[in-house]
Amino acid sequence: MTGLAMFALALTLMLATGLPVYAVLLATATLFSAGGVAVGAFDAALLGALPNRIVGLLEHDLLQALPLYALIGALLNRLPLAAGMHLGATWLLRRQPAAPELGALGVAALLAPMNGSVGASLHMLSRSVAPRLDHSQSTPARATATLCVASALGVAIPPSLVLLLLGDAMMRAHTEALNATHAATRIVNSQDVMRAALVPAALVLLLALAVSAWRARGAQCPAAPRPQRRDAWATGIAAAVIALLLAAVAAGRLYAVEAAASGALLLVTYAALTGQLGRKVLRDVLRDAMALTGLLFALLVAATSFSLVLRGFGTDVLIADGLRSLSGRPSLLLLAVLGGLALCTFVLDAFEMIFLVIPIVMPPLLQTVPDAAWVAALTLLVLQLGFLLPPCGYAVVMSRMLSAHPPRLRTLSRELLPFLAVQVLLVALVFTFPQVTQWTRPTEATLTPATTIDNATLERLFDEAVRAQQEPASAAR
Image (cartoon, rainbow, N blue to C red; front, side, top):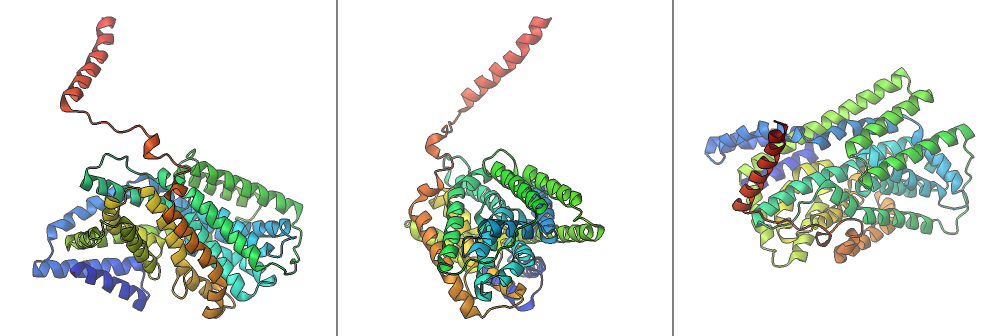
């Protein structure tokens, strides 16, 4: 129970003080570990494992993509690329009454996965798309609701940073679950999670577009200025290149680090050639990228330290025992975990949940529900839904803070209701039919089953390999 009290105190401090999350996590972990050592409830030797855990995490290849995603997000926030894409999309859809909203969703679907987080996407859309929505026939509440939904698209659409980090966390949790159950199943990886999310992500985007078009039915088509030919070609080529990079990562042709490096290089080249990357802009971009990178790594270190102290107090065992009490009803167990994750979105953002909550609740869940990729796809959809839930959803709170004319919460909730309804239906669809996540990924039936090799066979194969290496040497002599 000490660990649960520690978790509750950390959440309370986050809400009451406004201090950075990493500072709260580190301070709480230090306070409780020192108190536990003083009263004999915590083994101080456990803290000796902390340096190796942090070094092991920082050596992970996926974390090389964090600074690159931060750089891409900073470039998109400072360059007028998103505004140009929205102008072009609005002009192409000028015969549709919902052209500004559809254009905003299309731009977000293309750029939000490269931004890395809901907050970064909201900042980008507030700078580039929000002014054009304000000048259209959209009401402030409808424009803010569109920005909320658009910013949350980057959670589920591959290859977003949230999806990649969740895939890595699910791989670790799946490994722990298989070690506990000794099941002969292939461990899930980030590529499996990405492919499992493809169809749900496409449905999320299509449903959001359909709701926006439905809401604007019968309205007058907005005036859409024609973009200049030079700007249209530049933004069109940039959009095509970004789409190809995203598709290559989603299809497994490029690693996330390679795509992030290519995207950052192409954006810098584009900005330099078009004269948009002056000294001041470059300084601001680098400052923003370094600040976000430092924040993410600080959060990673703090969450690792916090989770280690939680495990030292036996909190993971307590939660696992509570979840195992529902192991006889896998559907109810999965619903309980997903409901808890939805509640956590009122306090924690996606990165904090991946680093802090997922490593605790997923291993016991995956011992009962073995399809980790399906569970990951459901987790992404639930996170996306939680960020849009009034009054405390992260996207709702942030969008009202960034809006020049923040709408009343009741009015904004009414505008978000159709999006929330279709999102709930989508979660129910994927929950009821796991096959939706299996259409674009290999299943266990299509994979070569793992075989167990006994010691005698292993020694025979080793002797054969040694003889095979010695025969060419003997022939040469």
